[in-house]
Image 1 (cartoon, rainbow, N blue to C red):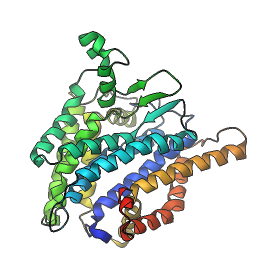
Image 2: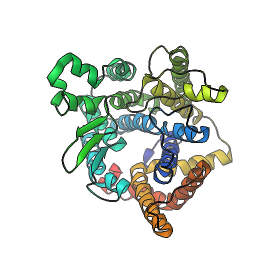
Image 3: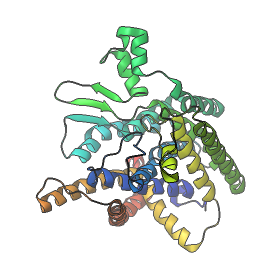
Length: 392
């Protein structure tokens, strides 16, 4: 299924990225219309209804796979058919654009005003900083990038917390100090600015995501034209199985990779929920082994021949994955408009869903509504020759 699309795009990457965007839509609908049932990080496996738990768990796959595919796509950009080109400028400009969008456009989409009482630095911020980091590192040998990426992903769980650093270094890690602010950006979510008219909060510490984007870039040669699809599928399958096997050992014996150990629940289902209950902010090693390992298996499956129904589904996913930033912004503003409309109709400030199935149904309807605009933009982006459109 790894046929090329318009402009030499790799279908499997757009398909998986589209699947991610659709799962992301479910989570954002939940955050818009189901906030009366909050979930923590990690979730309360004993107290969270299973349907809500697994709905939130599905969304866990979005950020890791998107960042990994961003690194992989950057390698493809730097190695077009028949030659090479520098990706430095593209990565720097795209990263800076994402930072600006997070601050000026996305925060408004979430809260309907700018600036709000808090500016949140979330996933788009993390991707932007990761791209800027990759811009400075991507010329290193791939084996170095793979080693550094693996070291960050596997080792960041062993790093000390801000409180431990403050105890060790005293004043250099006082809240608001340069050391504490740097550590907030890199590893421990919290406020960069916690007083004044506008506070700034880092929701996505960036260090682990830099590791993920480096691994994605190092995996780029899997999609070189010289790579046989059968060989690529075997490598992806092996890597995915190895990641999940490592997860079973590390998590099964509560050895390393997740701060919250799992425990037997009231029944088998709640035991599974406890086992799969990982930290996302920042993403623990176990979190990344699960999400990236599963994503690699999906990429391997996408190399296999597919039936007519599967081809139709993957073509739909490829539309959303072919214009991901456009769809991301479009769906956020669509949700803002729907939230305002629902509040006006019910005259209660907010309208909430009262069942998880309503989240999934509303997400499907929203994706159908936005499918044609996203397909139109994707076609324009690839055919117009307008340079700035490629950043979306």
